[in-house]
Image (cartoon, rainbow, N blue to C red):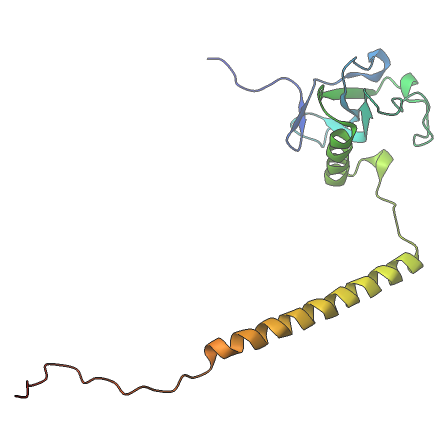
Length: 170
């Protein structure tokens, strides 16, 4: 019987290639995403934990694995790190960035931990905008309710015709 399981590693609905040692990896000539992986026996079905999601090809910035300040060590020298790629040959930079952001959000890789915190001034401004929108929507909802009330007002009763046969009057 033939197995239908694909070769590679899956993150969300994205099927990356089979992981290879980072030392041996060369970025492909097409566009796509890559993930740097570390061995971790707690991850299943394959013992690899994502450490960093990146983009390569087309208009992407240079592949950031040669000495990026995000990493506390030179990645190319570590034999314990692996990389897998997600081919996206006809994708735009925007599509690849969106896919990478979704993967980062879903897996929160160690080298890309969510640290983006807005300054208090930005948060106060956003709260003011939300309050203003809430007031506008409340006013619009009130107008809608007022216009619908006329449909639900009781109608004057009309005299009803009696049920049954009426004797014919001659």
